[in-house]
Length: 163
Image (cartoon, rainbow, N blue to C red; front, side, top):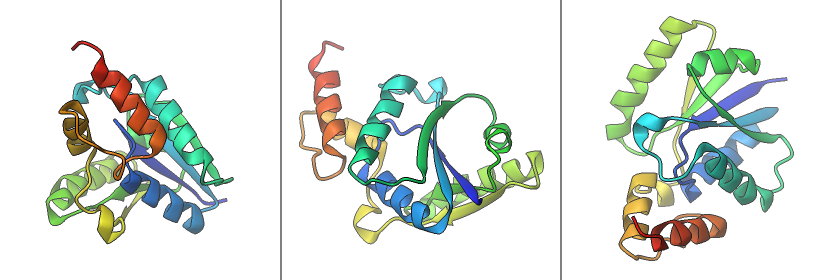
């Protein structure tokens, strides 16, 4: 069984993330969406909230070979623990490449058996980022074209609370 790990903070999950998950599910026997508990990025949602948003968003897609869980620590250790064969990373633009390339090379140094596969989202999602979605939502803008409905609700609830 060929297993791929799609790691990320997913703060929040976007339609671009969903696109990659859906396409990866057709390429691999098992896809594990690894929600990273990365406090350094200053996420607005807890790891449990982010995992729940991913699970709820995927429910409508009925992808039987996709699992979602949180993880901490080194990604290569997590991949090995879950018997993964590869890591999927999304590339939206050339600007993403340099950082993702450095990560892929470092992961290879840490564990030469873990491959990194770069996937590009559909053209309609190349401009999309979690950071931009959060900024738009925080300023009261409509993000319904960019994220699943459950994420729209979660963002409205998050930003309607006093900061």
